Length: 346
Ligand code: NAD
Ligand code: ZN
Image 1: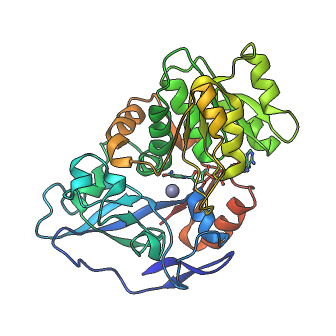
Image 2: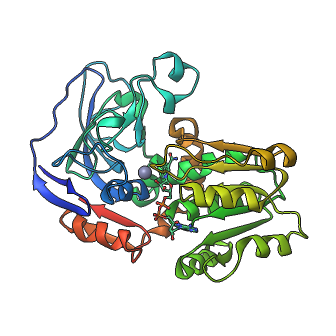
């Protein structure tokens, strides 16, 4: 089959690889119909996260059709349309039984290298999904692939971050980063009742584009975001801040934007292992800070219902639809921020 393979920093190719096979009775083989390029794939592409061996298959945002099921699979049959979660969980360990699927003892992330379970990725004609009953959802009739796909990763990541922030109706929310995850956070915060959503990006074009999603844009390369948000909130700050970039700089900014007693939920991925926590600020201003990978399994059923009901339309972030063969170009465009979101159709 054809698959997108990692070769080296800023180098991917579409190559021929062996078809996957069912390895356990819990596996499901999915014939992939579309797989998106995620901002998390860019960290691999840029060489920021080690552990991808040359030739390994990339990708973890996907939809497709069930092609084969193992003997223990109960929820799926050949031909079902499905969306998968970007991280895999066993559904049976102590963490999964607590609902902490992103902390699964035997889990990992599809297409994310050795440190994340070494699972082949989804930017391919076919993928083996471990523990299929746990890591797949049927796509309801009438729900387009282009909408369902984002429930398996970025929409649900953003929704989960807003949920973790404890946003209350009528509160003011600042979102740092206006990539696809930031845009999803804007949409989710509005659906969850935010009175105002400020969207901050250093790239003026990306910032301005958020107005179409109902946000108040702030291009941080031109306008001081702290001053702007303090002005807009009578010197108080944002009730909640969602950080959707990753790394020390934007985490520090989050602490400057949030009001005393406010909450920060960070989902940006970074290869930094440490960061100097603003302990005195957090202590005296009573700031709640939360960071973590998304728990897609916790929230995917909710986001799928919101999308199906038309309350959220995540497909509006797609800027480029390319065939699988166009993956090298898709990665380049997304890396250079000339694409907002690239969907590879297969
Ligand atoms: P992206 O790379 O498309 O977007 C990042 C945006 O941040 C860009 O628009 C960029 O201009 C902006 N930016 C970079 N540095 C900035 C700065 N200093 N100040 C202001 N803006 C800045 O990525 P994305 O797809 O939107 O994903 C965002 C982050 O979310 C990534 O780190 C991704 O890995 C992460 N993510 C995390 C999870 C999770 O489970 N926690 C899931 C999916 C994605
Ligand atoms: Zn992702």
